[in-house]
Length: 306
Image (cartoon, rainbow, N blue to C red):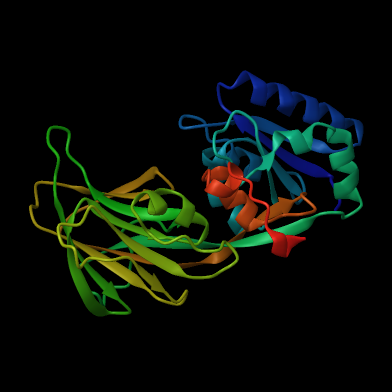
């Protein structure tokens, strides 16, 4: 990999993340690399400026923070095909990041990247847009939104808890009407996020599939669905015109929707690209460690392993 121009995004208002960013920037600049650096957070979005001010193709995005910081980077950088190296500095679970323990000797990391001693993992994303009127109307009334984890359709009110009524179509066929707290439409990457909290299935992040998980449905027959990646999921909010419903992407607000609107969710045209440095990268080890499964706490002597 050539490192001629690199983005460094660090978790906003996190002093540890900022210190790591400044150290890495200095080291890369000493290697004649041009660095674009800035904070990323709920009130800080450096990526439009990064992409607009780049004087040449961006070779790498170093993202220092937690999963939320990495999700933001993926939504903005996937269309440009920029690989992301996420490092868990100031984050919590860190499903999408390299451990900071693996990142202590940063000079060796740059050597590995220069010498192409790494892997690239491509992860499926979702895209969504809002339409008005009949399903034959294919002109969106919003921009096209991207999500690496999930889209969520939930009701919104400042003064009371609302039960939503959502009609769902798959490939233009009505499947069900859900009464409850909303719906989650997830990628395999997002299956260990909000989806798993709503009792949805865990899917290997190397798969391509779409999961639909009801949130607290008022029917025991409302179950999660796993769909082929080419499916188009359409969601229609029904009910009171005075109450809005929100469309969320990776936990960030996309837009408000109303009865008469339709949200179409499908596999995105882009993949998020992640740099993997761990030589023994195991998805199942990640599950054991991050979800605190018994395998991380109990050790048995298994004769068949000897």
